[in-house]
Image (tube, rainbow over all chains, first blue to last red; front, side, top):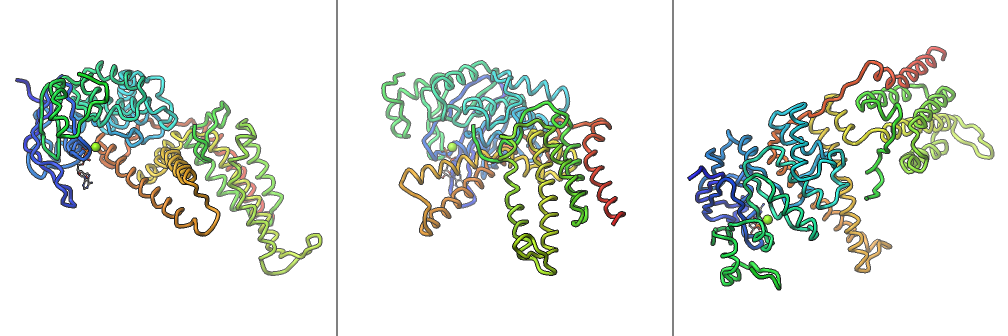
Length: 243
Length: 254
Ligand SMILES: Nc1ncnc2c1ncn2[C@@H]1O[C@H](COP(=O)(O)OP(=O)(O)O)[C@@H](O)[C@H]1O
Ligand SMILES: [Mg+2]
């Protein structure tokens, strides 16, 4: 067995206000996998994601990224390995131009000059928007912003790409284009989503998080055809959609 | 595309001013404005000449008047203040047509109008020829502290987003029959402003998360340094040099 990219053991977390969001989560993701993290609103998905790169520190349990424990001294390397794409691209794209934004991560890793420029082009190319490099993020369409947001993370050459609700607010065409792009990337993916058809389309494996615990983990199609499980955790397929 | 004033100051072009590196322009602008301000207030002719220089710089950008005029509108408060000054200032008076006005007030008003207009005209010349991104790089290059650079860069980036939110809230209010015609509307407007503030604050928190997640540790990486030739510096500083000579000349003559 290979070393898992993500190895979470008994991760529990309570917010400073006292609200317990995670109750001992175990999760392993292996290199090359595409895993969907499903769960209703408030299940703790975003909280879990923030543990993957050490923004939040578990109250109990441990997080390991390709064998490297997530601790203060490993933080920069962990953040290079785990690329998180947040839900709202306006949060992710904070620099005045696309080029500067994509360069931000690798520059923090110490890249400069030609090497940095090459990295920016490589990342923009991977999501098919190399022609947008000199545009301002607020002049882009929503679909373009989401792709650039993914490029900002790819530029750090992560080992795992974590996407929070990647298909939200996309029109059907952009949604399909994004799926094609995600499939074409040679990187491990953990995709947080409510969009069950998208999960089926992209991720062979799914994990269901509910009220801060993992309640199911298996092949996506199998999980989604278990209607009792789906109903219990407020997960619904769109009307007319069948597995 | 949004149309919030101020959000799209820059206008594409290919003139001397467009091509000058942003940091030389910024230094040139600041030096020029300081030198103009230092000219004694009574020297109206000299101030008029410097205003003409400022206007010439602005015209050299070849930006169309329909782009320039809205940007020059920031001048309005200056003009109003200058118009009021002769009537409210104290001291010896002088006749100006049918009315009597304060003499120092009049001198000060003319000087204020001339200096203010010169400042606005040159600042607009800078703004229409400098990309927001280059302004941020210029600040970084001039060793402005990182927090200030970040604030400037976020203002550039999020002005549109916030203006958009404001517009959406207005539409949402109007759709439910609200119109801000009386004092009774104020609590609603205040609540709206509060909501906008909270949203912006939360946005700030999320942006911070996104920055930290990409390895940010508090220092802005300087990714594409600017550089300028001595010739470019000389061009950028030329108006300031003229203003200094004028200012010194006026003082020596007076
Ligand atoms: N900053 C916070 N402080 C306190 N409680 C929070 C905070 N963020 C989220 N929570 C709570 O933690 C739970 C899980 O939230 P979250 O991880 O955002 O869920 P999801 O992403 O699955 O919708 C929710 O009950 C939410 O109200
Ligand atoms: Mg969430």
